[in-house]
Image (cartoon, rainbow, N blue to C red):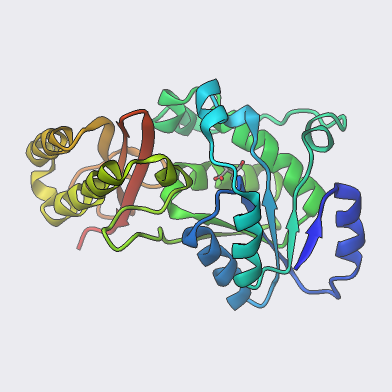
Length: 278
Ligand code: PAF
């Protein structure tokens, strides 16, 4: 696995890739099996796998969240090596943000105001600005993102549609712990008890999915149940894709999702499931 610590080195590496397509997996480190699944998915498609690790300050709307974000570079590199990653890029803040690249404006329509856009103002702008720069420098053939950040996937698709039509987008299903808890870098911030209770989030989502015609009544029950486990719900909605507008049984032509965000203590967790109406 090649370690690339500057964008200049990246150019040199790209010259030596011998015409393989580049599959790019952007991350902020604190890697878990879900990230490795992205690498594996890219390998299956025969690409040169390039993972970036960069904690992007611009996408944190809360300074405490940025400070507390887990930093585990040594174990990250080991995990990537074990997953068979071809190269890891660790760019500097200066290279990305002080190289004279102008910020990009992407029209997110209402997507930017809903859910994560509403509760984390400026978050998606930060994600867009860093990905815009990384995509410009790397010029990947394909990119891989995890479904756990469903709204981020939809935002990235807008960025690609508007600026990088040649890059192929892949969304890889959420990796879950045995308990059902969606894997997340933030799970390491949970106490043992909170981690056990946090597994109730996916259980609630699957229970709602199982009785979707009764969603509105069941939603209240599930929110109360989660509260009894110490989880404060920020949103729990039934929506359809790709707009994330509220869904109903009448929307038979689009994919549906149940989306959740909430706090357990000070840790904010998100999860979702995507499904079709039978
Ligand atoms: O999902 C993440 O880890 C980040 O939002 C990303 C895509 C690496 C951009 O900083």
